[in-house]
Length: 493
Ligand code: AMP
Ligand code: ZN
Image (cartoon, rainbow, N blue to C red):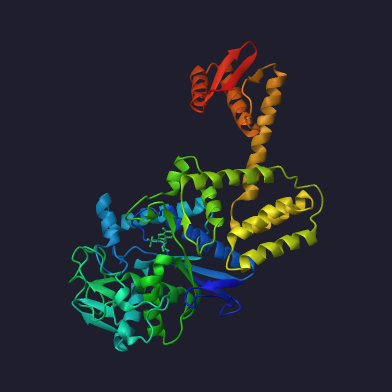
């Protein structure tokens, strides 16, 4: 597989450090709020990477942190503590906030078919690991103590800006409006490894350390957690593009200074999901969640499908119209799969492997998921039997994770139910007449199902339920008229 490496700015042939394991690390959520669907775009595409590695036959160990301490409102250690801000907003403790939003995050992941990483580690679990790293950085002169905090000294490195050839003067990350520059820093991009109480009196969680009671900076947690579970080297480190600087840059600085050798080979960054008004972020602008999509009637997997249709290294614009299109395409895809006959003959192995090659060629080219989706449509059109088509779809869905086979089965069952209800109605002499033209088959079936449910409610003398169904259909623009021995319906103009 060729995978783009942000550190070399090239697609490179992926070769893991060890033949028996691919070590993968993902920056996890800061659990002070719900994840928005922008955050989840990153996790979906990272999930695709992990599953594709497994599809290729690599054993993968994937580790993710949960940021429950140390992340300030600016990624460059300035401003308020995000967790404290969340706790204050909801009148809860920091740990309550962390637990609630960690659960909410994994619930969103479940709905989006994002696999839980093999190891999920809250930052507050690994304080000793950070202290060990910081102690060595102090001993070897990479870190200094000033004004109550321990800082990493970026001037000690020959090359600090690994992801971009930034000019230090152009970088204004830590100096946003309303945020005072930290006078303790020797260099503009030095960052905090350990805060002590001298600076943040209201910090809820504090631990003893050689430098005083305090808490770790945000960047050190990912180095500490990765080394704890994956050792001294890493194959792939992932995150959204905003993590590249300063977060990942700082992770590399402290990890390699601590280890004395190269740490991570590949850096995979997912570009942002934007709305028409700019980047989706937790602190500003439009904030869309998975629950909101569900409330509006979208299947969360239609959002996954939407993400898969574009490349992870291109920013993606979210509009409701785009999501509508994705949902329609996703439902059509499921309906087509539902129409396949799984037992129409043996699987044609030659056609199956040809299909797999097409899928692999797409994914091998820096995870071209939109071409992989095209390979899926090609499988549906392939000159072969349905059993072979289904074998291809099942195989590709191990990576795409759109629940295609399960949803198609649900659809088949639903159609069966509708058909048998219709047959039963016909047998009992109940007729349903449609006065409107050009209503698609699927909609007709759904309307008829409700009309029959209303008939059954009336039979059982549950008139409230019968009225409720009539109102529900009315809200959908369908008007019913009772006629002798049945119902006539039409779409209201
Ligand atoms: P956070 O919970 O803020 O630490 O972010 C979790 C992940 O989401 C990180 O990998 C971020 O880089 C990523 N992320 C943040 N905003 C977006 C966005 N609008 N689109 C895609 N990924 C994002
Ligand atoms: Zn991280």
